[in-house]
Image 1 (cartoon, helix red, strand yellow):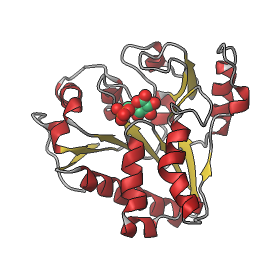
Image 2: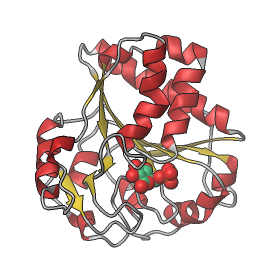
Image 3: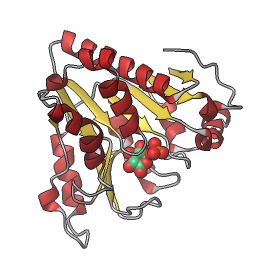
Image 4: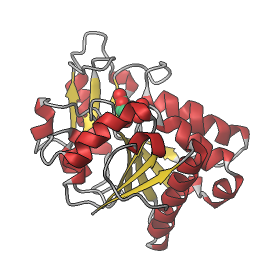
Length: 249
Ligand SMILES: O=C1O[C@H](COP(=O)(O)O)[C@@H](O)[C@H](O)[C@H]1O
């Protein structure tokens, strides 16, 4: 099932994403286990900061110490590099938690001690991260690139048909940096919930393809067609002219 929630401004998108995350956090905690969430890089960092940190009501409802945070993809650079998805999460979320002396979530990163400048250990980094993944994630938060990529699964890339490995590596990402590790469809399709966040007029053309074309084959469309409930959080410019029935969350 795919649902779409749209808002005029970014603050309302961030608030809705945060309330949705907190709902799934509470569901997991009620079942007596840690909240296992995977997050993405790119524009999502700002949304998490605005919705979960800056919004006081939401902030009060997050049980950070009961979270286990994974990354749906990671760029193969040191964790303090400006391209690192962990680095972004650290900047946008963890730093604010430290400033407020909040007990931090458990954050599961790639093992940066395995990084080699020539890429010869990228396979090992992927296997190591795969071994750290739980069997199923409660929630995966995804972005949608203007080309329809999600995680580091790019249109037409051979990793779209990966069936065995749960974390794969690539050295030919069309978007820099080229070396990355990424969730594959086996992880996405074994999770309990997936949400996309996409904002801005620059996403309208690709959202049109994803929602209008029957078989665009775009990675985001493949996620929509999978077995997991998918919720999209967008702002109005991102779905301008896209024939979807959007509601409020
Ligand atoms: O390269 C990446 O891009 C996607 C989409 O980013 P966005 O800024 O267009 O939302 C992101 O989800 C992914 O984690 C990242 O590595």
